[in-house]
Length: 306
Image (cartoon, rainbow, N blue to C red; front, side, top):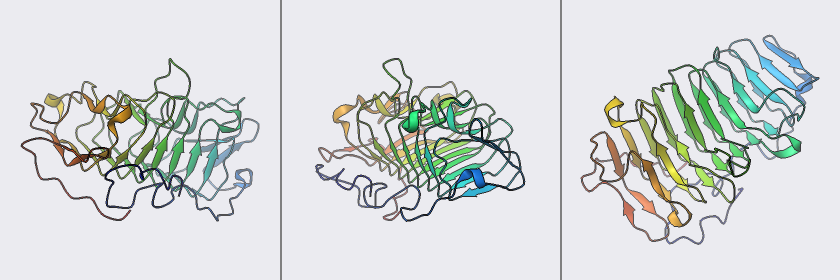
């Protein structure tokens, strides 16, 4: 586990297995990772001079590589990056993100990967930057971005699924940095699902999960620790209550409020006046106090396993 003692000081903690605390995330510790310079498959192009891999063919899976110093760009559908290690970027290369999906890409999957954006001399603005519809990031360890850990902009549509990850140290680029765990820039998203993640933040600047421009969102069963402005934010034009076609459902999150301004900001919060905003059974781990709507909807209980 990356942080086995993270929750020991709290009065109460989640009763399920917590990512990075009770089980490891990222690439398998005993894996023998391959050299990406050896990749030779249809639809994949390597530029060894600037250490960039471009996926041009649909349905490509890159499994079990040590991408340290490399950037991966996909322009295709259904690219899967799994069981791999990413450490920084080539400082002289053209990419500012470790993993990029272009506007022609869709349904990008990042699973069981470790991504460190600032090691090896590279200063990644984003760890994952997706411009096309459809993004899933799961069971991964995301850490040390100059700006946001995950940025989503470009074309509208698709869902964002962020689940069972350990996410830490966003916004490490200095006082003027805009750093979030998730920032949606501009496009309209069908739905955002942020589930069973763990946050750690000691230094840097972040507003947490900025779930803008989405028709509906579920933010549930996360364990929020660290210093940040807010854990959950939503203020874009399509996150306003009148624009929601579904619900903004925040439930069963465990959080430490000691170094943050609050659980959520600025549109939604417990006991706000919006019928599609729902807060239920969010637990202050320091005091044990439950933060929720007085007239709350019944939330779906969290699973007790990852």
